[in-house]
Amino acid sequence: MADFNEVKHPSELLLSEITKLGMKQKELAIRTGMSEKHISTIINGTKTISVSFARKLDIALGDEIGTWAKYQADYDNYMAMLEEKNGITKEETSIYKGMKDIVDHFIDVGVMRNHCGEAAKILQLRKILCVNSLTVIPQITYNAAYRAQISTNTAVDPYILFAWQRMCELQTETAFIDVPFDSKKLTESIPEIKKQMFENNATTMIANLKSIFAKCGVAFDVVYHFRGAPVQGFIKQTDSGKVILCVTIRGKSADKFWFSLFHEVGHLLNGDLNTRFVDFDTVKTEMENKADSFARDTLIDPTLYKALITSGKYHSLEDIKRFSAFAGVPHWIVIGRLHKDEWLDWSFFAHETPSFEWKKS
Image (cartoon, one colour):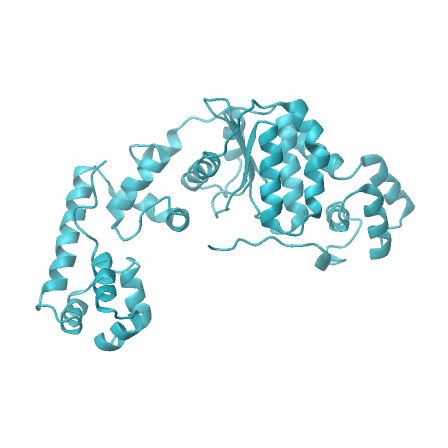
C-alpha cells in the first residue's frame, strides 16, 4: 500500500496553521469573507481550495501570494499519481462514493484516517476490506444461505453489505473469548439473557450481554446499520473457531431488538452456523421461520400466550402488565407480540415501548 502521508492534505495544513495562530474558524471566515460552513467543509476535507479562496487565505494568514494554491496543486498532483500507481479506476471511485455513509462511520470510529483525498481513502478501504480492488467485492463467494437471500432482496447493496460484515468482524475482533462455542451453555444462559430486558441503561445492558455470551464462547456486539444492508443480524465462525454474533437496532423499538437477538440465538442453537450467515429481515425461508419460532417461544411461553389470547384479557394496560409479570417479561414485549400478531392495533400502547438510538461519540 502506498504511503499517502508524503504530501499533506491542504485541510490538514490549514487546521495546523490556524491552530498555531490561535485563530478560530469563525475568525478565519470573517477574515476571508467566506461563510463558517465553507471554512468547515474545507477543514473537514470535503471541499478543495479554489484558486480564488487560496488567494484569500494567502492574505488572511499573511502568506506569500500563491502559497495555498500551490499546496492544493501539489496535493492534487500527488493524488493523481497515487491513483494511477495503484490502478484506481473510475469504476472503483464510483463504488467508493456510493459507500460514503460507511466510510464516514469508519472515520468516526477511527478505523479510517480523514484529511486525505479519495485515492488515499480508497487505499485505506481496500486494506480494511482485505481486497485489492473494491470492484471484486460482488465476485467473492459466500455460503449458499447468503446467496439465496441476497438474490431475492433488491434493497441490498453488495458493497455496503460486504463492508458492514467487515465492521462486525472488526468490532468483535478484540473480544477475549477463552472458551469454545458451547450450545448447551448458551441454552442454560437464556434466563440470564432475558433478565437484561429489564435493564434500563442500554450501555450496561450491552456490556452484560457481552459478558454472558463470552462465557458461551460467543463474541457479541451491537453494530450500526446502513441503507443498503437491510439486516437484523450476522453470525460467523472465524478460522480460529471464535463465534461472532452481531445485531443491529434498525427497528429502534426495544421489542424488535430483543426479537432479533433471540432470532440469532435461535440460528446458533438450530445449527445454522456457517462460515458467514447474514440474516436479512425481509427474506423468509424455513431456516428463518424456525429461528422466528424460537425467538417467539423464548420471549413468551407459548402455552401462556395462547391462554392470554383465549382469555381476551389484553385490551387494557393493567391486564397486559399483570400477564407480563406472570410470564416474566417486560410488558412492552407482550405489547409488541400482540401488535405483530394483530390482536392489537399498532397504535395501542405504542408509547410504552422503549426506543434505542445511536449516540455519536
